[in-house]
Length: 102
Image 1 (cartoon, rainbow, N blue to C red):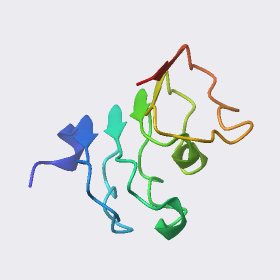
Image 2: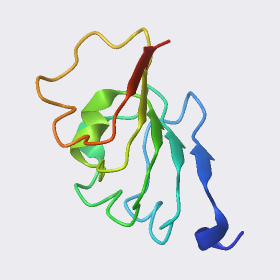
Image 3: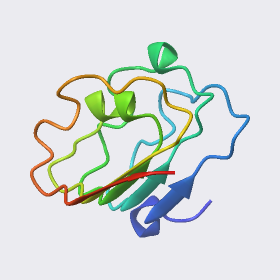
Image 4: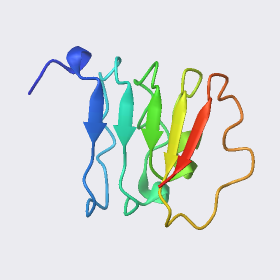
């Protein structure tokens, strides 16, 4: 296992349906996070991403922005199959300057 402080990118492949609650503990320097559409938001602990500071790019269902510290988020990539984007989901995204729908 690599030193978590050195990890800047995490991509979780399509087909993964759940994430352990401590999966992101210690990833303080993560800059890019990609989550598959299959992950059930309702099954995630509200603190699952609490150790991630300074995330710059997030790719996945924007509902997860409710759980992510997004002060430094600059790019949001939303998969084309997302049917609903919650109102105000980008509130407090002070640095957001690009939204892509892929």
